[in-house]
Image (cartoon, rainbow, N blue to C red; front, side, top):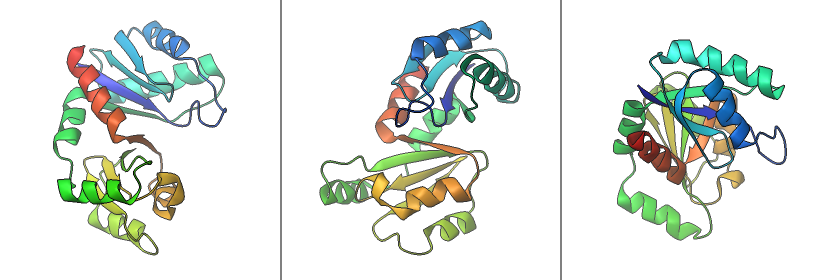
Length: 184
């Protein structure tokens, strides 16, 4: 089966530095096949006969042992990633409106979480000042569409605090990882 693994908080702001060649070798040493990384933020695709429950703790432990710090690990199958892309819950008009609000920023993100968020989770996260942002639940994911840089919004900061372990990727990265999974 083909998978993507997403590491949280590596190579961000000069902290927790990990070379992708070293990450590749760490994953290969676990017996994972066809390992490929994408950009410097801790994304890799691979093939394995093991399931997610077996892989997650093994990858987490190997990473901590090799790099000397812990990084939360999220794994998704190729089918899950394909479904995530196919089920984008925003209309073309909503995306265009966000893009028009700030032409210099990324607007669309996916937060990968451990449990599928409920409508109550989304309502709680959206309470307060989130004017212009749209948040929709997916399967073990939240889709965020923001009108300015994600760094400027309180909602983005709240997501990580209220949902427990999570990691975010912009839409271009999500689509590229899905494409890489198809090419394994």
